Image 1 (cartoon, chains in turn cyan, green):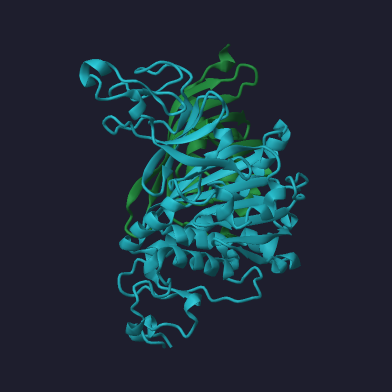
Image 2 (cartoon, each protein chain N blue to C red):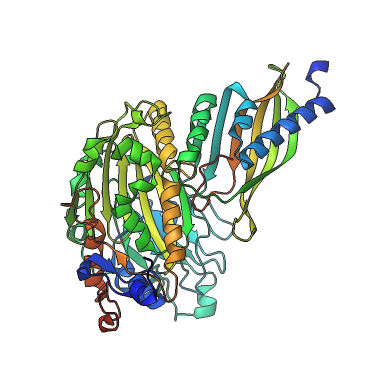
Length: 411
Length: 160
């Protein structure tokens, strides 16, 4: 029998950690707090080193804490991150998503980051090197040395990814990962290269997207995954391994691509993974390393608001690929994970649907994270583990974020 | 040479063919779409990414693999928002070696929401087509969909 409002909104008879108040996905205040307590204090992937291969190359990054960053390779090939803002009058220093400072710009000389507004110039190490007519205007009150760029902590690690952290005082990257990426270190041994980039903006919360990457129960949605995965015994042996810090690995399996009509025979593997193998690690708070040999996909979620997330999708191959190998990886990657693939659009549709449904102001239901299957592939321990870390950082209970539990008695 | 001229009749055949492929995909009439393709069909969706400064191939199909992809669509959960493909021929010329007709068209793809019929531009780009004129009519031998739009929301199971 269908339920009335009171029955519908009553808390399920489950443990606190097995359910989630829907408002953690939609509340504006919680999102602002997440920016402060999680996003501004976490190591996030801004790009891959192959996106700025030469000295003076740059890439921009829209940090989900609300910061615009420039990632720059300096003249000594060291990579830095700076706030993309001129300390003079707060204009963007760089407008394009990628490029090089090698050549002169309309406002400034070569090898300089020059603000187009008033031509303040900086070198790629972040030093302020020129303020036009400085002495005439500022006399001795403003010195170049006081106006360097704001450098943001950066590490290049785990496959050449460029990680940034807005928190000057937090732990090093390795100390926050809890060993999660060490679990797939054998797959990240060779220099990688990005061959694919696209983004999707979804009217949904970033945790919804990470949830989808953190549970495989939704494979029922994907015809492709049912045929190549669920129909085969190895699928049910996949297991979640939780790592301190809210990260989780799903152990790898052999996919049966030949079960899917039209899939080409795969013979090309990936370092540490044979052909057809699939390995995955979800990194808190919104990064997923996802390798289906012969291609790798990296998701980075950039929350734009409580109900809007920009997701960057990168496809990677090996820097040493022959043209033939690269073509295979590209074809394989995009047949599943491209904008016209047989898997990714369905996952995005799921998050889109959640974004609409959970924005019900008064009748959004309690969300279940309650599957227990000995940590096997349809267990929801990945999502629960994520929320344990979320709770620790936020100081809030995901199932009762506003301490109202007494207002909603059990069913 | 006379046989290399683009006559009104050649242009009309090409225009009809391109329109047929658009309408067929719009209405999910995949049989008609595949019938418009040459046996050596070569299809690709490509875009340039200013973010990674690389050209990308998002989908590559021949006639057989395109047929398989289209045959499987009814089995897949997907966004069912109708799409309308609109093209405008920009240039048309003859390949002097093969006699094939090379047609470049501006492409716009519109979404028309099922709930309310709100129309928005989904994608812009170009069709770059190689068309073979046979005794049985024009056939699409190559199509490159060159997209300017790179943010496609949830993406699309049905090619452009």
